[in-house]
Length: 365
Image 1 (spheres, rainbow, N blue to C red):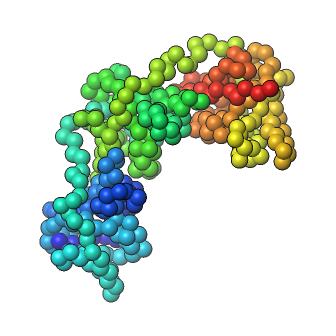
Image 2: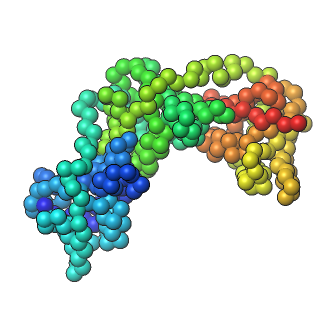
Image 3: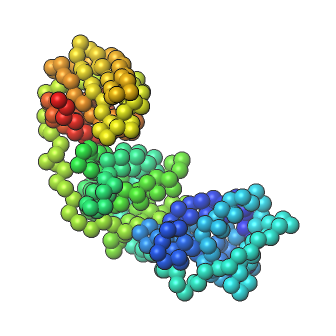
């Protein structure tokens, strides 16, 4: 193999692909990054057997070939020389990188041991605007579980019905639901996508505002966008019937300016962030919300204006869960809906919105 490519292009590609390598894998080959030089292009690929990423850039290919390089070393080195033209040459079991008058070489890994990268051949199942997909992911994944004992809850249930994509995530203490419009869909379906994989998709999207193609095939979810292909295994299992969890009616409604409320909750959470419960209490009365946190170190108490329809109430939440929901909300004003101190609280936009966050309150004496 021998090629010359732009250093900035190569650095951008390794930044994308390197996240799929696994430096702690039992099999050392999964630490590798596969390079394929062919037909005026260089394709970089990596996998940890759960997620698969490849990116293709332009290259002046002198000699076509395929090689597996140590992923971490290769990516870190390339990032530090990204301002120049880079030559990559493979000589036997050695890869040689030239830039200017400098040279670096290191041993390659065994190509025969590298796993096949997933290739899905079906047409895209649906397309969606990148901006809508970013927002969908940001809102959905905050409620996904990190508990390995219930694998299905480590994913986001994605339901496609008609031209609507609905995402659901829950961890037993909170729930996210978000809906977005899609285009060019080929049929209704229901899948569970790992939250970790969706977070990688969100990073790959960057600031792109184009259209993203999604393929669902053979228990894989694949995204294609501007020279990058990302795939992940879907999670098998039956998701919880979330429709039974979300209350149909509420006795109380509170509308509050989101930014000020979020900042107050964040400040109150500072005091209790290392506590086991991480508790903040909302006292809602007289067109005000009092936000309080207290422990043996001290007490934080703040008051903000609000509009209340219903009864006065004192209700407590995990500060992180409440702050996560407020931060993910994109509205200027949010609405809190609940029935009692011990019943679920639902947060949505004050007007019509395409999301809701449900948080269970914390019982206090």
